[in-house]
Amino acid sequence: MSSARPRRTGLWVASLLLGVVLLAPATSEAQLRPVDGYYLHAVAGSESSPFSASGAIDVQRLRLMTRPNWGAARFDIAWETTLSLRSDELALGRGFEGAEPAAPWLDLQGHLVDRRRVEWTHGLDRMNVSLRAGQRVRLTAGRQPVSWATTLYFTPADPFVPFDPTDPFREYRAGVDALRAIVFTGPFSELDAVIRPAPAPSGGETWTALLRGQRLMAGWDVSAWGGMLHDEAAGAIAATGSIGEWGIRGEGSLRGTDDGMVLRAALGLDRLFELMDRDLRAVVEIQRDGFGAERASELLDTALSAPAARGELSVLGRDALMANASWQVHPLIEVSLLSLMSLQDASSLVSPGLTWSLADEISLRLGAFAGIGPGASATQLRSEHGATPLIGFAALSVFF
Image (cartoon, rainbow, N blue to C red; front, side, top):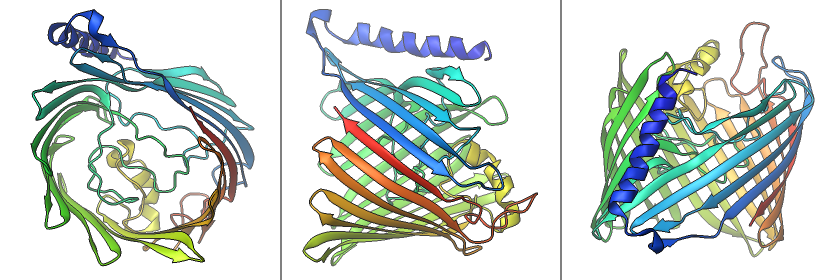
């Protein structure tokens, strides 16, 4: 680790504490909050693929969260630790490895154990302090969740931490290290400014400075942002609303790069149906991502690109279609089917699932992933999803 990172962390922490001391009242006004938690125990098995042997993995994740107050200051702290036991050097992804902060600038995470078959990580996924300036302004500094997404699965206009659309355990959004100011300009409108440093994949660091406006107009939630994203000019527009019983969500962004402007956009429809007196929810989304690969031969290069290293890509292909349906077959049981298709090579990733609510805060999830399409050769992928092996998993989630 470079010597700059510990000094950088110390400056941020010192700045946060100094701000609290100067702006907050006496310590007698400190208010502690209960510690909430989340525990996940997942086991999964995978067939062999061109990139790994068959094997199994056991993942246990514990998350502890609290939001104490100290006078006018409100803290948000979340610590998470994940223990992974593998039968071999098996890397499944799909949420099994745990969500890490996206391009972390603060040094708040690390390994307790890092061996071939055992990996134990921990870190602060949230560590921030918020202060209100009057009734209309809120300032937040530190590691915090920031989401400007409009669509549900593909979120190309979210400049911070897009979710993996196939992650079965995406309970919490990873935090980013930033300074944020929100001005509430009206009952249904606001301005949101974020300044964020992040390490660059090639070394050094990049800066993001964006301003977003959001407003409710004729029943539609409309927003736009612009500024500098990872040292590049960028802007986006988004809207969400409904026509009849259909929900409509769309977002698009333009990004300046050395090769010209890059367009990233997604459009989604969702609706709640009734099937046999039970709720059936359907979501369909389509995405075109200018950072994605145009053909299978470019997939590996895209996986090694700077946008992928920064965690900006939901999928590797340029054009993708996603459909997800979930049906409540019983008040305690829900079944789902997700399908993710590459429109470049027609390969698909299919994931059926079943969720059983064992108690108010306890659920059991069973699921699988299967890739459909041409696999991989010895040197390259022949399709985006075809090389994905058959994966089955069971997961117990407990909130407390």
